[in-house]
Image (cartoon, rainbow, N blue to C red; front, side, top):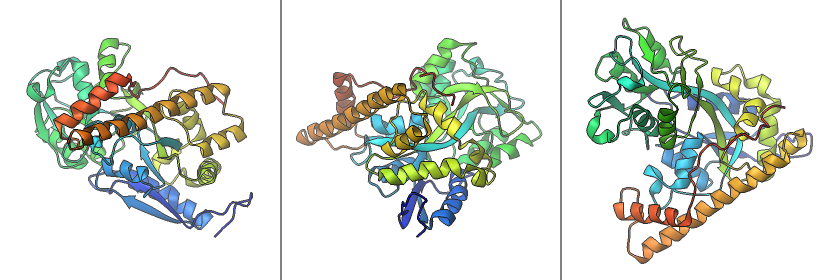
Length: 382
C-alpha cells in the first residue's frame, strides 16, 4: 500500500455511495473517473456502492457502508429534516459533514420549442408536468417551480405524467405527452431532445424579475440562481438554478483519511479534470464558494487541510460551529421523536401520517430552523 510523503498509510478499501448508471444518470461515471486515478495513486481498492435510491445512498453514509456520497444541500437538508422518503426510522438526521466539493451544476425546466409556455407565468392549472416520483425520493425542484408559478395545490391543479427514469422524462416532452420537465443541460437525453424538429426551450428563472416568485421556489427547494453555463446551446445564458454539490461523510470517518483525500483531490486535480466535463468544476475555488454560504458543517479533516492552506478563517470557524450545532440539535430531536413515537405505539415510517405529524410538531416546538443557504461570509476568494 503506497504511503504518502507525510507517512500516512491509505486504508485498503474506500467506498463511494452512488446511484446506478441508469436512465442517463451521469454521476456514477463521473465518480468512476476520478476514483480510478485515486486507486492508482494510493493503492486503495475503491468500491462504487450502488444504492437503489437516494434515501438508501444517504443511509449508507449514515451507517458507514459508504465513506462518502455526493448530494446537494437541498438533499442533505431533507435527510436532516427527516422529510419525504427520509422519514423512516433508519433514515433521518445523522452527523453529516462536508468532505469536498463534487461539481458545479446548472439545471432547469424545459418545454418543447413550440410550447405555449413562454415563461413561468404561463404555467397554470391543467398544465402537464412530468412526475419523477417513481424513481426519485422527492421532486422539490418541481414543487418549487410550481410555487413560483403560483400553483397552490399541485396534486389537484396539475396533470401529472409519470416517467420511469430520466430518459423517459425528456422523451415525454419531445413527444408532446407532457408540457414541462426538470432537466440537466449536460444529460445525453437533453442533447438528443434539442435535435428534435421542434427543439426545446428553457423556462427563465431570474429572481431580479420576480423576487417573490423566487422566494416561493426557495421555500420549497434550496438553490441559488444564475445563467446556465454548460451543456446544450439552448440552455447557455438562460437564468435558472445553479449551484455546487458536495461529497459528504459521517463525522466519525477518520480525520486523516478526509484530510488526505481533500489534499489529493486538490493537488491531483490537473490529472483527473479532463476525464469528464463535470470534473472541471471539482476545484478548491468552488469549494470555498460553497463554504461561503453553506448550512452544512465541514469534517475536521477538511478543516485541517484548509487551515494548512491558510484559507480557514475565524468567520469560517464560527459559522462551522453554528452549523454543527444545528445538525446536532436535529440528531437529538430525531431520536427524541422516535422514542416518543415508540411510547405511543406509532410506527416510524415516512408514509405514516401520525408519525409525520408527531415529528413536524416536535421540530416546531423546538424551533428547529430549516436548512438553507446562509448569508455570505465574503470569504470565497483566495
